[in-house]
Length: 124
Image (cartoon, rainbow, N blue to C red):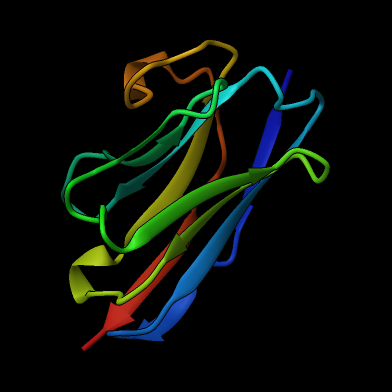
């Protein structure tokens, strides 16, 4: 069983940056593919960025030039840095994980473990 806890959300002005963290407990993330998703009010949850167990990275087009996903295996923590934040980035951000290798984005339907989410609000 893996427990995921996100942190790092908050309120930020447009153009600013945030780094979100997702710390896992219960098991090492070494063999896990992980991803960040987000959900804005009234909208479906959407994929933001994935980091496969073999190191393959995929970004959504909406954040491709502004996002960096990374993992610190020693800290068992996944990160997402978002730069040049826009109001449309406002959402609750979730991390998800599954012990599987993926060559593309980790599908939401494939996620086995979810965190509780962290809110990001970007004001113009």
